[in-house]
Image (cartoon, rainbow, N blue to C red; front, top):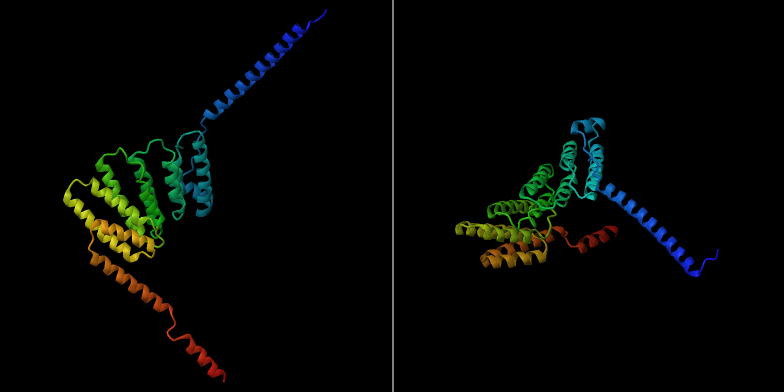
Length: 288
């Protein structure tokens, strides 16, 4: 039987089409199985109660907290990969903070993990993470980062809140930033953030007398910041804010003069009481 070129071409095309359909069918089945796997939500990792975890590690609290945090990070990562918030996130953070109260990293980590994985952040969510950070502030009263990070949580989630709720948040942010500014190593952006929050407070305050009181409080606190600040750029920013608030120039000048006097005194105390040449001369005379 002779096969003409046209028949051979038709058969070849049919074989290619069959192989293509078979490949596409297999690829679609594989993709379907992968989608089913990706949408499958595994069970969350929930740590045992604090006393159980502590007992299991023979009261080695730091080791127990490290193990708990590793499990909490894995649980959060898996939940985030599947596009949801872990049901055990808050429980795990509470267990770790209970087992080892001085485990500093758990406080800002829970805040970031909780808020960054929510589609819409409600005031109650911000209160939840800030209450946890304030729990850490009791244990670490000298760490400026905890009140600073708690204050930052009030930025970015308040566009459609009631003015009363927003005013409460602003006042709490001011208290947190004032606490942070009084601690060693405070971030240089604190004065600028305080100025912004004080301005928001005046905008949200309906009573004019309360608004004037808020302005006086801001001037008084900025004068304190000016006296404490060691950065020329930050001092310049504070002076500009005081000028905007209408602060008395004589008060600002007085603070700057006292600040300079303190710097001069500190410099004088670091210098030797007697000139260096005196000690060299004395040493030469003793050698003779």
